[in-house]
Image 1 (cartoon, rainbow, N blue to C red):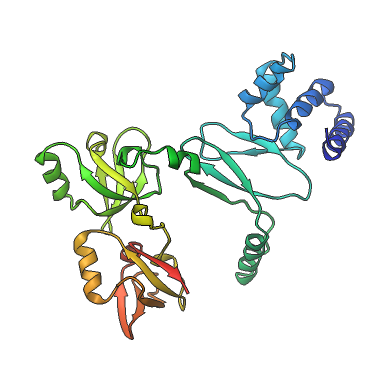
Image 2 (image 1 turned 30 degrees about the vertical axis):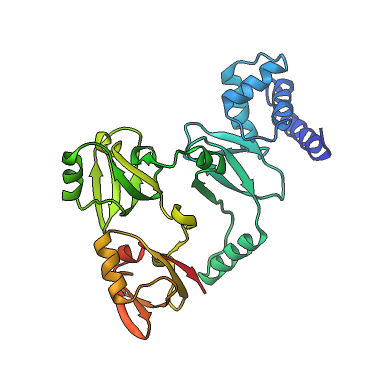
Length: 307
């Protein structure tokens, strides 16, 4: 056990004596096993680790001890968008953020000094005194992406993911039904909700569409921007007033892409955000010296790179 962990064990002993906590010795043993792992663990996973050390504590006692350790600041409980809470070490003066894979539930810790400084700067700009913060980035880890088949059904995509429709399975009836909703091969859509049962809700052409799970399984997709070495990139709708960018690609329906190409939205073209309307929609752009208005949902279909 390293020096930091030894110090924390001693601090906990002192606190337990001061507070007259019952079964203090058993709770210290639980903390010791917990500190031996560097992973985020659930209560059930910690119980399994304790069993490997030949400890046979009641599950309710382990759960209560974790809550107590969190209360005293030795354990950090994380309620990510996962099935169960996870617990990690909480060391004084140390902060990190998290990447969470929504498929395999892997949790990756990261630190970025520039990001921390930027968050303080943003808080200061708004006259806000920041006490604490947390950043949780949800997505797919590299292992899960590499395991994916080249084509998958949209029913297996994750919430928040941009995907491109490549083909429809089934006969003309399915194609006609989807065409009546305005969904065609080549379109890019954002998956808003996918609970694993019931309909999926897609953002498409500035509208929300509900698609039954049976039909969703017949819509074959690739992750948006993954074709021909493309990268997902930054959406034009995320830029602020005055910022400039170059166009990487235009998504959306084929009709939408044609309309924007005719307006001059071509790959490599520089574009500037002039201003947003009072309610933030629409947004005014400068493209090749022309002033153009776009709805924010339309701008979200345009991938750009800041300059």
